[in-house]
Image (cartoon, rainbow, N blue to C red):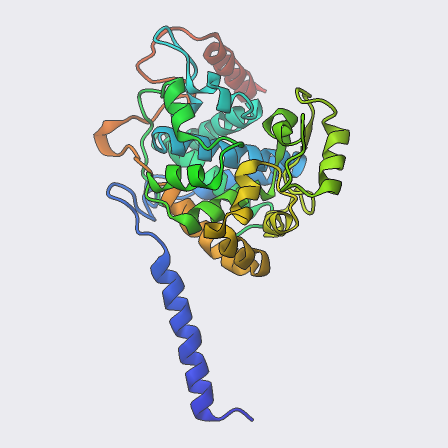
Length: 349
């Protein structure tokens, strides 16, 4: 029988742990808040969650696509939805930069579909940037990952980044841990954040060309031989256009098996596997592989920190009427005309 004193100490310990976890959650930066749309669009998150439940049920791969879109937006020039912008006479958009060529085209369409549904319900009060951040969170939740609150209040940026800025800020699949840690440190993210955010690779697919340098002409010695041989079946040449799952154990489930893969030398990218090879991050990988709850806690912290990088707030940005173009672009767009016509017919019938 547990004594009263022991019960009290146990309760105190659990309570203390709870407050430590709560204290670790980053506070919203200036201009963002946990309840930004509480009055102007209280149904915002339910609209997005309900729609994505159907989208991801129909095609679970879209979860990874939406999560990756948020990453590629935030890491380049901040979470301003600049990656959603199409090119213009002023130059090519971020979407044409090499690292972004494999972003799922449907992901862009899903974000703008969500924008339309939200604006139809609430008016033009919610930014594409906030919608992208919420969609990334819901993609994690709907594939089995942790739920968490998203600080909101971002505005949409007015400019897209150059291709060089995109290359300089995103982590390439062939990058080693030194590069990974350096690029994230420049954004105020530490080694734990780096390893936790890399865990996003627990869902989704990769094109063979992103890792076949580890197979041809010579196999990377840090790669498990059986794993390598299986990859060669799917990717028979260095320039194969095929795709493979990022996590061989549970490719459609957001869990900690990605780290189990790394411990078994079955990481797909150099940037993945080197996290286990490098002694600076090996212990973090091992702790996440053994404790999924710990991974989830640290992933949430990393996502909230990343989601607040260089956000545009107040009068420094805009709320786009369409996610793929700036409001100041007044040219007639055939896609808009078609969308308006479709809306009219939908109303009639």
